Length: 168
Image 1 (cartoon, rainbow, N blue to C red):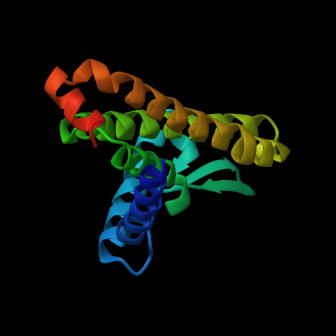
Image 2 (cartoon, rainbow, N blue to C red):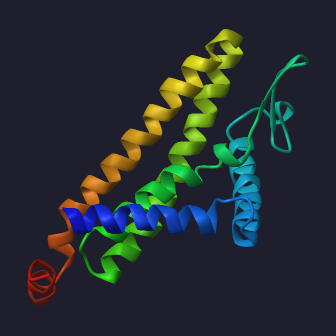
């Protein structure tokens, strides 16, 4: 458990420094592209006139903005740190890193759609929709993915790989 926690916190630090911290050129490029991608996918879920670049226009006086913190990278990096830290094969980790990215991004688009829909009904719903419903949805998704990753570890590994990991 100590090894998992040590690797987990080190992974979080490195992943956020490389892929999220503003001074990192990789992070700047990645987050701009990820925000564009998130905005594009979100635009597919809303009426055409509601979306303008990274903005969801609720009414002429109220706009939701998809920013770096809304692009789904934060929950994905926490999930990725978890699978990096957990003992498994590189193949298993790679498969789940890709699967986790797709699922978390899909759920993030759903989260933005839910927030938009709730705010359209009543502007005062933003805090409830964003801070509670949306964030809980992403947390439950990432935790569920990690549990599935751990449970699937034995099924995807050959007996020799299982023995090699358990002996570490």
